[in-house]
Length: 128
Image 1 (tube, rainbow, N blue to C red):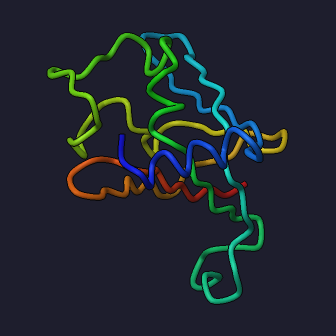
Image 2 (cartoon, rainbow, N blue to C red):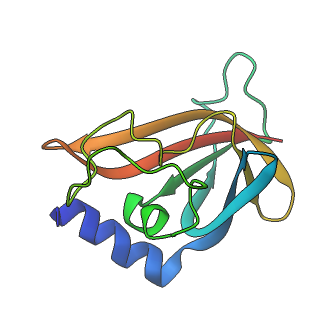
């Protein structure tokens, strides 16, 4: 496992707060609870249509992909040790919902971050 991914996993296990990702599949909603680092956007990030209710979230691909119910029966075509394909169906999508600190929020940006070809974290932005 990548060193940076291992560090993130340890930090999330100690200090992460729970968030729930939700995806609608075949008329049902599939949910996965994962630990996350949740931060309000900084003044430099608050531009354009981004509001004070916007949040920046970091989750680990390890925690998300270990959830057997996620993403609702869709599995990647090739199973590998690390996540190396940015089109992997297990990544969150902007059409998914996220529940952070209670209310449902809208995902506005999903950015998988790779190191040496392996996904080491998933950065999310949400509003609501």
